[in-house]
Every structure is written in C-alpha cells, then in structure tokens.
Amino acid sequence: MTANAIIDINDLNLYYGDFHALKNVSMDIPEKAITAFIGPSGCGKSTLLRTFNRMNDMIAGTRIDGTVAIAGTDIYSNEVDVETLRKRVGMVFQQPNPFPKSIYDNIAYGPRLHGVTDRRRLDEIVETSLRSAALWEEVKDHLKRSALSISGGQQQRLCIARALAVEPDILLMDEATSALDPISTLKIEELAQELKDRYTIVMVTHNMHQAARVSQQTVFFLNGEVVEYAETERLFSNPTDQRTEDYISGRFG
Amino acid sequence: MAKSYDRLEGKPHLTEEWVGKAYTFVCIMFLVITISSMVYFVASKGLSTFLVNGVNVGDLLTGLKWNPEADIPLFGALPFIFGSFSTSILAAIIAAPLGFCAAVFMVEIAPKFGRKYMQPVIELLAGIPSVVYGFVGLSVIVPFFRDTFPGQGIGIAAGAVVLAVMILPTITTIATDALAALPAGLKEGSYALGSTRYQTISRIVLPTTLPAQMTGIVLGIARAFGEALAVQMVIGNAPHIPHSLFESTSTLTSAITLSMGNTSMGSVHNNALWSLALILMLMTFVFVFIIRMLERRSKL
Ligand SMILES: Nc1ncnc2c1ncn2[C@@H]1O[C@H](COP(=O)(O)OP(=O)(O)O)[C@@H](O)[C@H]1O
Ligand SMILES: [Mg+2]
Image (cartoon, rainbow over all chains, first blue to last red; front, side):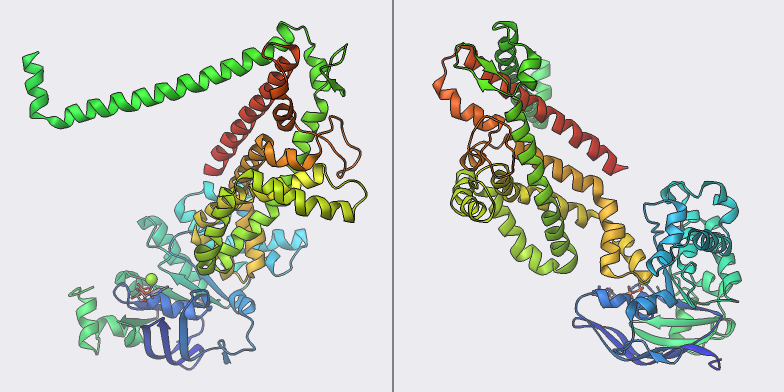
C-alpha cells in the first residue's frame, strides 16, 4: 500500500503553544489516490492536512518536530520555498472562498502570481481548469461575471478549478463539501473520483459515509493520534481497533 | 382611566417603555431642531450676501480678489476655495498611504504589538488639540520648508503636512477596521495558491477593502476641509492663489476665523463671511453624501 508514497510523514508532533495537537504521527500517503481523514471534531485532521502545505506556519506559536517529506523532500527544511510548495500542494477550504473578482480572474489569479501574463495562455488555463472542475459548461458564457454571483456548490468547484490552475500534484480538501447541499456534494465527490487519476487527493471529512464512498485509504484520528490507517474497505468492514469500531458504528463522535 | 392605570401597574415595563420612548423622542427632536436651525441660520445669512447685498454668486465663486473693505468692495472667494481644496486633498494624498501601511502593519504584520502600542498612540494623536498641531507646524515644519525650498515656508505644503498628521488617525482607524473585517478565508485562499504576503496585500486585501479605505479618506478630507486653527497658523493667510506650495495663501476656514471678529453683524463683509461658511457647509454635505455612497458600495 505504501509502494508509491508521495507524502511521507515521520514521527510528526505539532504544538499550538502548549497544546500538543499531533502526537507521533507516522504514515505514507500514496500517489494518485484519495486518502480520507476521519475522526471527531478537534482531533487534528485539519492540523495534519495543513502541515502538507505549511499553512500552519502562519499561526503564531506553532511548533513542529519530526518530518514531512513530499516526493522525497523534507518540506520543513530551510531550502524549501513555501510559495513553491503551495503551488505544488493545492488546497480547498470548508467555506467556498472565491475572491471578489470575476470567474476568469479567480482562475487566472494563481497563474498570474507565478508569472503567466500571456493572454492566450491564461485563456487556455482558465478553460482547462474549469473543464477539469466540471464547471466549464455552466460558466463559459459569463466568465466576466463576479464569482460571488454563482451558487455555493459552483463556487466550491470554482475554488477547485482555481487550485488546479497552478498545476499542483496534490490537492488537499478540508471538509470541502460540509457547507454544501447534497446534490453539490455529490458533484464534488464525482469530481474527486475523476481527479484522482491525475492528482493525489487528501480529504478531511466529518462524514464517514463520504470517506467510505470516495476514498481508497482512510485514516482514523483521535485526540491528535492516528488510531488506524487502512484501505477504506478494510477499515470500515473490519476495523482492528476497538475505538475505530466504536466510531464507525456511531457509538461516539 | 382607572382601568388603564391598573393595566400599567400590573406591567411596570410598559411605563418604562413609554418613558424611554418619550425620552428618546425628545432627544431626537432637540437634535433635529438644533441642526435645522443651524442650517437655516447659515443659509439665510450666507444667501443674504446675494439676495440683500446684491453680490453676484458667480463673482464670489470665481473672483480672484477678496477686498471687502475697499471703496468698491470685491468678494472673490476662489483663492479660499482653492486653498481649502488643495490643502485637504494634498493632506489626504500624504496621509492615505501612511494610514494604509500603518493599518497593514497593525493587522497583518504585528497584530499583538499593533493592538497593544500602536492603536493607543494613534488614538492619542486624534485627541491632541489642533492648536498644538498648528504650533508644532509653525515651529518645525515651516522653518524646515523655508530652509529647504524657495519661499517663506508657510503655505499649502505646510498646511497639508499639518493636516495630514491630524487626519492620519481617522484614516488609519477606518483602514484598520476594514482590514480586520476582511474574511480570513480570502487571504488563506490567496496564500494557499502560493502567493507571498506582498502579493496577497496588493492583489486581494487592497482591492477588496478599497471602498472602505475610500470612506476613511473622504472622512479625512472632510475633517481637513473644516479644520481652521492649525491651518491658519501655518498657511500665511494672504488672500490670493499662490504660485507655489510654499507661498502664503488662505482657506475658507481661516478667512472666516481671521475676519469674523472685525466685522459687524449685518454688514456686507459679515454676510460674505457667512457665504464662505455656507460653502463649507454645503461641501460637508457633499462629503457625507460621498461617504454614504461608498458605504453602500462596500456592503455589496
Ligand atoms: N490556531 C490554533 N491555536 C490553538 N489551538 C488550535 C488552533 N487550531 C486548532 N487548534 C486545536 O487543535 C486541535 C485540532 O484542531 P483541528 O486540526 O482543527 O481539528 P479537526 O480538523 O480534526 O476538527 C483542536 O483541539 C483545536 O482546538
Ligand atoms: Mg477541521
């Protein structure tokens, strides 16, 4: 299962000030597949996810030891350029957060940051990204409209397209469907299925059924620790740890 | 009567409610009456220059010579209007970038230090009396300009610098509020795409908060436009349009404060000063209107 690992986490501990949020986490996340993080609220799922693109750097008082390596490079070493890392590791958030700009400018934002200025090249990127996010048909006739004018589900797919526009290898999704209605949720799950052939996806979800439906591997967290990590089918049908079984059978959380 | 008294006795909060309503109503009426009588007073005085004394409105607004006590009195207020606009707008041009950068520093770069030390200092700046600003301007800025640039040091540049410092708290405070109100998700979204802090500030933070920033700037201009004492101390008070930023000139407010005591109520000169006050008041209405428009825009 770890033959083609792209993210390699070793003895990772993370502290928010005095609070020990991640405890001795070690795991390998395989390439071009969907890995789901499940567990009760506050158990550290987002915290771990945000170490992969170093979004935790911005929280004052965060301390970390252990290593997180992506494609063989320790991303917390001094040589790593955070902006380049984030270009390779895209992120979609719980609340859709399109910029108050046009649909076009939202998608072109990332490429422009990284120096793409050619209009035709940008047009191309906007179209492919929107197609990849299964949004092109719905918005192609009004790319100049404000991104805030489309529905929440469309906004979230726009955010996925925006992340894809800088050509990442990894896509992190932090409860990306929890603010959406069931139909929009289904669309994003289908989209994730399509994208996993080209991207490594790590998704945090509070919804076990979603994890069971879309992921190939599932990690179960509790109080900052990894309790169990297995192929999704195995974890849900035959958990080895009593706490996993309690959680997936709905006895707590 | 007895019946309604019983009803109120059973429910004392109804009495309280009524008293509260009556009290707020009286306060509001007092405000409305004060404001409308002031507007009426300034307007009737200011307009009588044209209606009673027969001065031409166009001559007052565009005339270049102000000499109300001459044998053939001249009421050209354009130098004052020009002086008021140029000092306040230049002040805003100086203060706006400073205020924005200070706000960015306090919100984005060093929030702890900002909230603990900078915010109180800026609030303190807002509380300093304008005579102190004028005094500092007169003893520090004017000599500096006199030594550095051709001219006497007094004038639009000195007035604008003094005003810039005076309106900096307004602009900074509003900019800080605007930055703090920006949804955190927007900035995160930008950083997550690999943007640097500078890129996020210039491409997301500044454009998104622009209407609110503009509100602060217009509010600053309005304050500068109405400031009298500090400007008067450093501007020189010569009633003509200057050829440089370092040459004596005057503003609407300083023209009023300097001459008001020397004129008798009802004289043409006195009425003409009221006309200047009327211009000031109308400009304030315009500023308030612009701010309202901006606020509506920033809510969208
Ligand atoms: N910025 C922060 N400062 C301090 N504690 C935090 C911060 N962010 C999260 N935490 C704490 O870390 C723990 C894990 O949070 P999080 O990773 O967001 O959980 P999850 O995503 O699993 O709900 C929680 O107990 C939370 O209170
Ligand atoms: Mg979370």
